[in-house]
Image 1 (cartoon, helix red, strand yellow):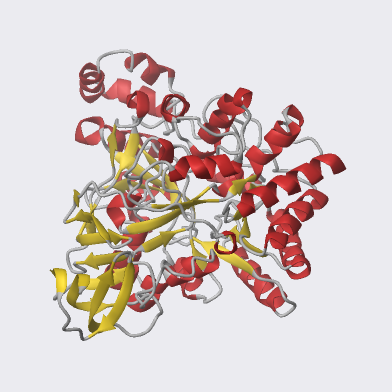
Image 2 (image 1 turned 30 degrees about the vertical axis):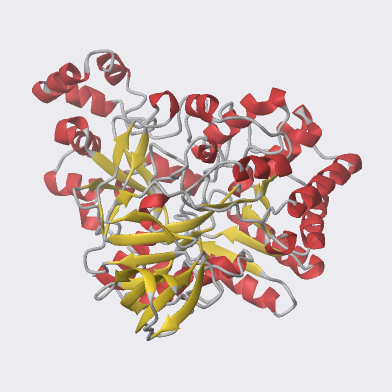
Length: 585
């Protein structure tokens, strides 16, 4: 007898094969049969008119701290995600010496915009080494399956202390110690090592992430250790990824391809369309393809849509965060501040004229002259966020275009947007992937068989980005709704975020609806699938704020054969497992 029979759904099995009407039978935590089934079951889920897909495998999240206090792992929980990988971009919380806990919190706060007060209050430290961190995760219960990479920043600080934190050169002894700890982490089930080399990643004190300037001998020692374990990969946030250093892109691709081919290590790197040289991603793809013929396996990790910030008066960064006039008004009760601004056009003009586009105080902006220009004149890249978020807005709806039509100062237009809806108005600021005012480049990147989708950043940038719902967007936009250009086949969209991501990370029994695979499954009302508007909630430790965005249309999500949510209601089941890289099991 089956434990569960999903009956009569449209099965999109994750392999890219054409969808078909079929039943899916589950016993325990495994899929046992797929086809036209008649056997008895303890429970039957009718799936007529529904898509039945594997659960989404999200390989780029930052739940490293949240996973210690939160069993649900939202927003990903609400978007059909069943497995997440943390420890990306060189930041995380293991290994750690007790005296460096606060420093790692500051690193995560600076790089990933997670409130340090929430992390300090919420993290329950019961580990020092990476294997102990994995053990700590295993002692907790989660709705989703969770896996982790070893972060270069934490590793460097653990081995080298202040020298590592300040990006000083590693000695031969340092390299041996770091390589040993990579081996230890791999043996405990790490999915490899992550490193950040981009100048835009800084700790809260302004220092770059440890490893940003790591020499080639350090990178080679770490890649060799990962390759020697027989499993896992190296994830890179490369120098120049935002277009801030165009020469760095060629240098980064060169070392990644070289080490992958020579050492036999898989590398995946963040590969957006930058706004300075928008076609440079083509060169990166071509370099990966050429190196593949010489034995390299370097995988561009692409974005499902443009990336930037959702700006509001409540976020840490918005065009008027440096306005002295607004700062003085914010000392008033919120209702009074909004009343004064609404009733006094001169006061609004004064605030608008004090617009400051750039990072928070004390955080310098790096990059070439063209990259700096994106911040000196940001208005062409800013768009009003309406009740239904348009993730591919037409350039005519930008703040710049509105200001030109209305013959107004774009700063005043932006302020009016933020003050709308009783001060809850939002602007979407496109910093990556929208150089041509459309998502055509993303479609090409996603359709390329060499790419893998990532960079959703679940758990990070909590007051300015809410991209953990990327899997839902992939279905609604690319497979169903896109109106400004060609779409992508549903089967490809499902495969990109299930079988492809699982295969890259060595999850050999997830990401497909096949007998013997883990029963991570979504039942989706495809016609009804939709987003709600991102909104601030104050549910982090200490009451800190984060953006939340739920989805409608996920009729049920199963993890390891158990239903974790049904029609938008948390079942409170917590069947998630700690994922350990295949060869370590």
